[in-house]
Image (cartoon, rainbow, N blue to C red; front, side):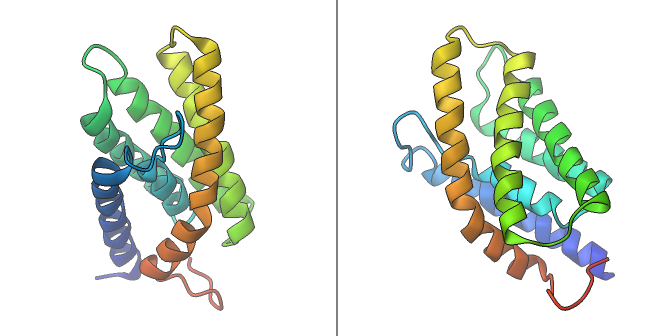
Length: 168
């Protein structure tokens, strides 16, 4: 198995584990109206270790898993998938062109990625109470950002990125 194939398998396993954590404990970890989105955090961080196409696939599967777990019965399924796919594609595209492995950049990317995902979801599936939606998005963005550093360090170790060598 090539290193990139092994890395893809490990990212898939990380996404599956994030789906398990999301379904089992995310609602228990709710603070106010903010609930952590482990699938989104893992997909965004995983996208830091992929090219644009791999990151889009990671976002697609994160969206599919979250939509299967949490989508309302009459709307939102496609919006969850598309918003996560676009954001992860953007992170993968930026990674190819601008930055490399860095914990501070991972925090900023998770924060902006969470906010952008929420905004895209709102554009695709508008919510009735905009102020409540905005407050929940801000709280969720802060919550995901707090969880980003430990998850980044775990993912980096699990995926097998060595800081002393180029992973491309």
